[in-house]
Image (cartoon, rainbow, N blue to C red; front, side):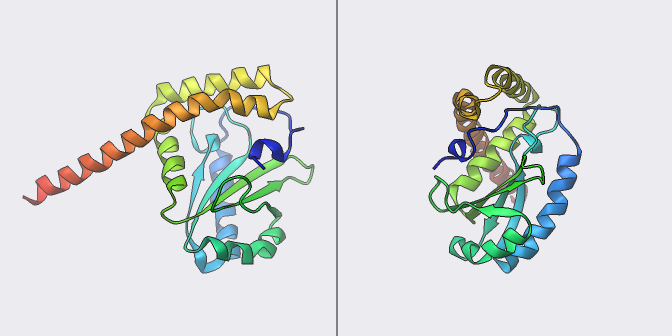
Amino acid sequence: MSLNQCNDSRTVEVIPHNPTWRITFIEDSKQIALAMGENVVTIHHIGSTAIPSIYAKPIIDFLIEVKDIAKVDDQNLAMAVLGYEAMGEFGIRDRRFFLKNSAAGKRTHHLHTFEAKSPEIKRHLAFRDYIIAHPEVAQKYSELKRELAKKYPEDIQGYMKGKNGFIREVEKTALEWQNLKFIYSNLSTLTNES
């Protein structure tokens, strides 16, 4: 099952960036870290709510790096106490996915959990960091999201499919950009040590 199939009836809504998303991420990360315990390596804010100045669906995405992905299943009850529904791999191998809704039943959180060193982590972080570092790309993404939300107000699958080509293209560029940053950083370190 894909994320698109999770709740096909969701209304597609994108709104201007809200600075409280970052505050919610920080506060909720503390609770998540306590619930998941020593298995947590780090928690990242990803998705459009992590990108200042762009429109986003008001759903906060968390990327949780853990030492052992299998141990995440042992924490499903602790996560349920916090209001999260465990979805298992949910269409992506070696992932654990959790959903959270508000009291009114509106989706508020997505938790993507991967074992540290998973290529999925690099992919998500490269996309986020590239978009933040390139405001012109961020604005194109924001405009696309707004157009698709108008075109598919009651069709989350249509909205997601409409973004897919843009995301894949930017993701490829972002991974290349991230690799170049790593190479230049190492060259700079070597030059400074000489």
